[in-house]
Image 1 (tube, rainbow, N blue to C red):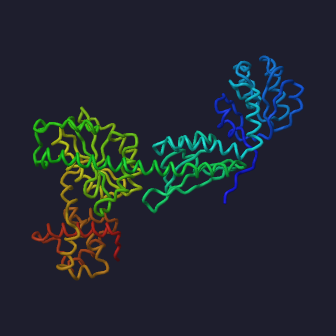
Image 2: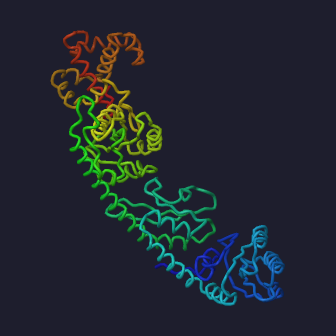
Image 3: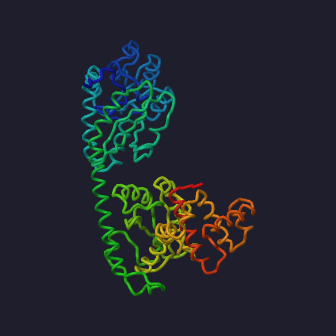
Length: 505
């Protein structure tokens, strides 16, 4: 059972509840504790104050700028926590003096006697004051509808204690400074279960030591229900948006028909009016982007789509992201088909996410209109297949792909099954990978043994020895009638073994 804290209340906590919540605080140290409240009507009473007290100036002690300056010096000498004074007395020079003395100054509009009575009650009963603070914070949290809003309330409330929402090692929101390890700082963590998922996120706060760790943890727990509700709502909104965009893209595809081998006439299909409601600009020059896993595993789960969407649209909230097959489609529209500055910037910003999620990226050429968009989508998908050869984070532009796009669509698994049947002895050999790789290098080099040896990084005699052994297993690469078939076969086997990270000896 968690008991309310009986530690002295701090200036920062008092400043968050009435009556000081409506005041103008200039706090030198929000973590400074307050042990008593003194209503000082004279300088003699001010001189008798003990350290860690909060003094409210009244009457003779608050008659003008000179008196406030003297009071601030006395408060500094007595090691008081703060000075509270009416706005009619305080001025810019007083604030500047307080800053030079590192003395907290709080300017109020209410009657000093009423304020002193309220503060005395709060200081004498810190648990009740903290309950008031939590009630006010609960109201603010309940008003938030998004994760960013909930974290914003927490960070404003805790001021010098940064708070972040973290899943794994990724900061989903808040201040990343909460994860920075620093001397004399303690990290407080509260688990937040994602709606409908087993995985959990964490609210992390970096609290100075010594500091109000218990109070911070209580506020984090207080924020947890609002955060879970905001998280669930964001998932529902994202799911509805994704379904809407996917259906709309399907309509665009039906409107345009399948992309033709020859460039389509852009004037043949007009951009529908409802596309603008989604923020889609499909009437201009469209350059498609295809995001795809390095190792496809069927249609991605909705949770993965949610995370990819959040990463891709960071800073580009109007860019679409439509789940399609084993990947995702987006595009950039521009009146200038050669302007790729914004797209390159987006790809550079997404690279870390692409590596983390093991994605590759294909970029199509710019084509006008709806039909042009569909053609660019087909090009981007081809380019993404080629990019898989370079691993996670790779970007391939269709302009640079050329005929290699055909190799990306080879059914490598089926071809490998053919090799199991017609090259049974080769597939049983322990050094099959080296033999196939060598024959492929020689065929790629047009039969040049020296070029193949340079590519493989081995001596020319090693290449000759491997070719001789490969011939014994049926890899007769120099027979014209089998050269094409063996070239495709070796390419497929090498690609497949690379995909499964096999390194047979």
